Amino acid sequence: MEAAILAKNIENYYGQYVAVKSFTDKEVISHGLDPIEVFNEAKKGGAVSPVIFFVPDKNVVQIY
Image (tube, one colour):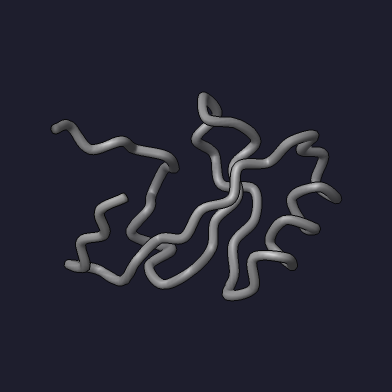
């Protein structure tokens, strides 16, 4: 199975929640430890329906 890349420079966000404008726009617009704050910051930054996801620590595998 091929890995899905959801954001650019993901190695900068290990252990944080990350927001991008959409599944096709991989530019990070907000990040942090609190998903609500990340969402609100993304909305303030102009995202209509931001995509929020958690980036696990390096070398941690999560299967959904």
